[in-house]
Amino acid sequence: MKNRIIYLTIPVISIIIILFTIRHTKKEHKKFLLPLFFALSGLNYIFESFVLVIGQGYEYKPKLLKNAYFDNVLGSVASQLFIVPATGTLVSILNLKYRWSLLISIILTTIELLFVKLKIFKQYWWSAAFTTIGILVFHAISKYWVKQLTEESNKSIRNMTVFLSILVSYITLNFLHVSFLKTGLFNIRLYKNPYRSHVAIATVYSLLFSAFISMSLLIKKGYIYLFAISSFLVLEIILIKNKAITVYNKLIYVLSPLTKLISIGTGRYVLKLLHSNEFHNR
Image (cartoon, rainbow, N blue to C red; front, top):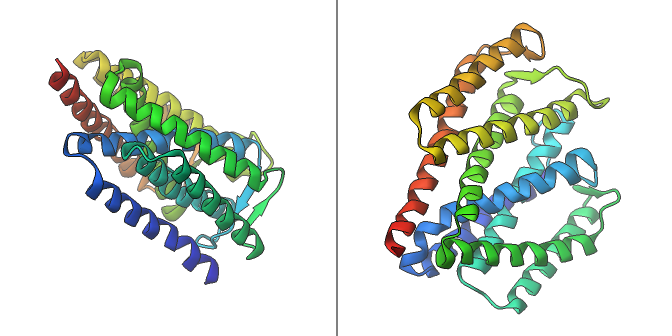
């Protein structure tokens, strides 16, 4: 119970930070808040796939799920989808000075050490020093990113933002229906733990899906867009028939396409927000 309460406060604090950020953001920059938040969350997800999934640098213990590995990943979501990108958005969109980044990094590092002491977070090769440095670097990247979106209208950053927005939506929704509703798992073994293998394969699959869909959105050719969607739906049917995906709950046949549609809708909305800025700058 202690673990759950503490971990559930993380999204609450993050929402408070986001609301504060929205309130103090300039009117002309408000449209960048959602794209920026998604982009920063996406960067965190990619980072976490290396440190948590591949490297096993640490372990979260929120005790929200019976499955220990999925519980670990859910704890990661609390950090990488909420608190870290929330602080990055705050620092970058409000253009806060370095001392604020330093203060936030110290606070988050202190919280991490407290979590270790409470035995709700375990470090392996990862150390608190990495967290302090990592947050400072992340805030620097956040500031660069928002400048490229708001001032430079950098097309590469815009395209990456669309890609990362789709990625965040797709990975998160997929994980939720797999972990809570037990819909299905990739049956490809990379590691001894089948759930770790699933998360690793699902991440690669999500990266490919997000890349193809974002490219089809950016190219703006209807037939390419339809081809990309139908290709992944057909691929999943083939994977299921060849037992590369094991189905445990028939809801997967509804939730998998729905997850794709929501993720595509997220990408389209983010692209629309960013395009409105390009039109304004002309």
